[in-house]
Every structure is written in structure tokens, then in C-alpha cells.
Length: 271
Image: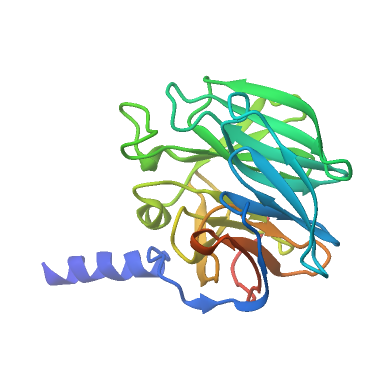
């Protein structure tokens, strides 16, 4: 009886089921940003501190705020994250904590800090849109589900999903998150995510100072957990500095601070 149980335990450990940190990032920059309540986006010269209904643009070299967009909270109640995609700032927005869940993609001009257009995804999605990224000619988006406040009846954090869309925002594929990572999300969900320069997916939860490294599975519909990295940001939305390789930007929500960290190398399959 003990041998089968031992075999199961060993297989569980070998599968990478533990999401506890085994690697650690190195902090390389910090900037105060009172607007940094939801996350941050970044390009070569600026970072963009994201709040519920505000985006503040900062000069990375001086740390000075150079521009700001502020929206009507009735129209933009909850910006969850933003990402610099080409010449645009693409943001994930939702009506959290209102129900039924409804989401949209909000697109901005980062030079003029002006709102350009909305893509209304509506309430037909499998959760609340928390982050969006672009890779391989497709849009990748995470839809959060929660235990308790803001959650839909009959769905909890385990229903959090990654979806792939085409340019017309038509659903192509969908994946669930692995149990070990979901356990770290609980009772909330994924708040940040971005494809790394190594082709792997890096995601954060709501509070933990951890980034989870994932890849698409070779079979099935559950993402593969490759590693967990201890990072100096407290969950929330993240962004890679595309001009600096493995430098990840995030926020420390409690003190309203933007943080940059250099990530260690990670083994395992990439996309």
C-alpha cells in the first residue's frame, strides 16, 4: 500500500506541482508613482502607471511624470492592466466588481495619451478580462474568476482561463491554469501576464511576490507550470521592457511604487 502512495507522491513532485519560489529576481529600479494601483506598462523611454480610471506616463530616466490620461469612472470603472503593443497602449478593462461580468479592450495613443477606441467583449466571456498581450499574430487574454466578491455564482478562481483571439477578437483556443498556480491565485485570480523574450508566459496573481512561468502544453488544455520566481512586486499587472531582455516591470501596490527586476533564466519548453 505504501509503495503506490509513494509513487503518486513522487510523480506529483516531478510534475512541478509546487508553485513555491525556487528562483529569485534582482531588483534593478524603483520609482514612486501614486497612480500605480493596478499595474504598469513600459517602453524604452517611459513607463505607464495604471490606476482604475487613470494612466500616468513617467520618464524612466528622471522619474518625472510627463503626461496623464484620466477617464470617467462611469465609463472606465476598472482598468486592470496595459501593454505597449507597437505604437499603441492596449489595456484590459472590466466592470469589476459589478455582475454580470463585462469586459472591454481599451486602446490609447501613448504619445498623446489619448483614448483611441474600445473593443467591447461584453458579458459572453468566461470571466473578467485582467490582461492582454500580443504574440505570433494573435491576441492573448486572461479572464479571471474569483471566490466571493466580484465572482459569478457557480464559478470560483479555478475557472480562470487564458484565451487566444484573432485580429477580429474571435475566440480561437482556450487553456486552464495548473492546480498549483491556481492554489496561489486563490481566492483571487491572475492580475498580470506577459509573454517573455524566451517565448514563455509569465503571470502574476493578486498579492503574492511571485511570477509563475508557464508554457502551452504539447497536448491537452492545461498550461504547463515550469517555474516560480520570487519577484519584488506584489502581484498585479506586469510588463516586460522589450529593450532590455529579461527585465520585468511591476508595482508595489501598498506603497504606490513601480519596480523593475531582472529575471533569472528558466529551463523547460518554450513556445
